[in-house]
Image (cartoon, rainbow over all chains, first blue to last red; front, side, top):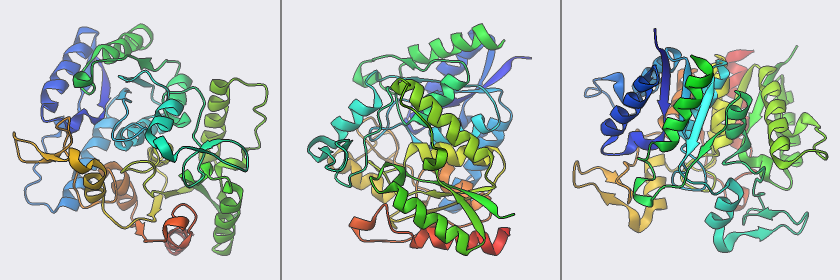
Length: 191
Length: 191
């Protein structure tokens, strides 16, 4: 039976998310995997409050993760210097289960550089220790990684490398080259 | 033996992080818990590259999480509309282990409203379905929750409520009222 990959990423928020899901599942199938995309839940949310609907989606996603063997996360920065926090949760959840974590980002700039650019004129060097920091004197993390150290390290610790690709701005959340490179890493190591 | 609480949050980036750690540990002790703060690792990183240091901190934090019984996460928004992604990973990791997740935020505004404010003039209503969205036509998530649904739902699913408190701007990452309320929830339910 084909191993199942949980397909995590902020593309769930795209209006054409179903099309991206089809593309990811097709790439998985070509490499002998079955891709599971969070939209696949087919939930009926119509009778629920917004909070109840959120909880129902959480449960469906968790159940889907529980049924998958590994995760490939889209770690592309999303509305700020860091990746989507829902995806970060899912990386943690799968790592907590001891399942392999792979990831890609469609922005090659490292986290420290992106954070400094995000802060702009609010970037300071703290008087106490000279560290680059924000207006709250909170340090700019710099471990030569693509995001907060818990995220890239989860991939490295699983024996993989985060795939970094620069893509045109209009394909930032749709380009699947980096995703396919992750599937190839998984196929070479996990089948 | 006192149950151990993993103390997750972006306050690790503060220059006075050790002082906040002391405050959190003292509150835990008053309620019969032992608080473990990520700085407690006492790692010697001096001979390592930045990437190696990041990985060493990841391993120390993971080991600390593995030794804790529950997590209380500071879910206050950090450099954008969402919480710190490292903390989001840690919530996921502990949830993946089936351990209780509690959390607080020092901003009471809900995620959808914060996201809209963050987007500012980039906020649109997508022609395809009328949904509030950003310039990439990616929807603004709205489940009446404090952040992405995976995060607050993890707390609710564990039987707790995210504690929301508004604090003065200069105490945004330092105020511990919400944290103490979480410890009280834990004491009432978990000891």
